[in-house]
Amino acid sequence: MIRFEDLHTYYGDSHILHGVAGEIPAATAVGLLGRNGMGKTTLIRTLMGYVRPAQGRVLCDGREVTGQQPEKMARLGIGYVPEGRGIFPNLSVRENLVMAARPGIDGKTAWTYERVLQTFPRLAERLNNGGHQLSGGEQQMLSIGRALMTNPRLLILDEATEGLAPLIVAEIWRVIAQIRSTGIATLIVDRDWRKVLAHTDRALVMEKGQIVLQGASAALLADPQALGERLGV
Ligand SMILES: Nc1ncnc2c1ncn2[C@@H]1O[C@H](COP(=O)(O)OP(=O)(O)OP(=O)(O)O)[C@@H](O)[C@H]1O
Ligand SMILES: [Mg+2]
Image 1 (cartoon, rainbow, N blue to C red):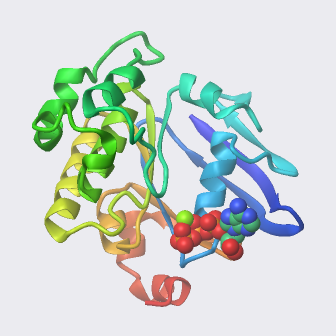
Image 2 (spheres, rainbow, N blue to C red):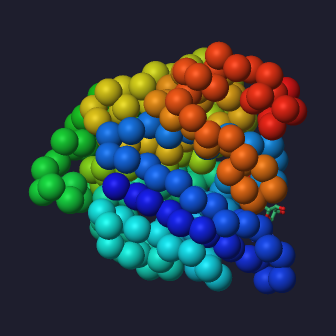
Image 3 (tube, rainbow, N blue to C red):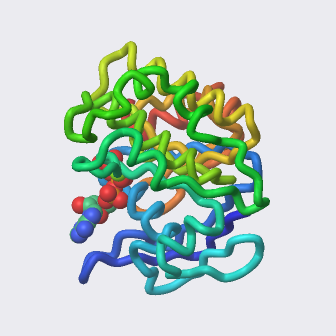
């Protein structure tokens, strides 16, 4: 569904991505691993159109979408839960969810308001609370709920469990597994590489703006030494 070729991305004079290539096939869960500052978020921002690569291409369904507006990527069915959460603090939980609602690219609405609330019962109890009144875990759930309301075919999760208590982290992984089982493709970045590999079909490992290792998640899990060298664990 999404393919990217030879991506070179800069922030000012800093050359961050050095020829990154890969793909996220439909209904496939892909993990993106790498130590801090290796370029994971920059790759996602490049795919979503928040930064334009100096070189290389992003393709969606075989059509070039390099540097398209993020809104256009969303309309193509890409849901994005950014690092550090993307909710509207001054709107209520209900408003945050309802304003994101849209049918999928196939015209279907698999994820309704009701279904999102069933998936996140904590949000159902806080519908009238403002985004700023939620705990960190609830804000993260709202951020994922908002992305699901757009009925994406690909959901990108950048550090969705960061800074959350273990029980909430477990709940988020449970929801990620549920989302995966519905056939939505996922691109998952998380510090817990074991969890990432357990919840994905394939994984890419980045180092200094390049993909240095990739393969089936089960195979990567079976060779912890290769992974350890790249992740410093
Ligand atoms: N807006 C920016 N302007 C300049 N440099 C940036 C910017 N954002 C990130 N960088 C730099 O780009 C490099 C890659 O950062 P990026 O956020 O993509 O890494 P990451 O793999 O997501 O790291 P983390 O695991 O800490 O989230 C880092 O050296 C970072 O300092
Ligand atoms: Mg990051």
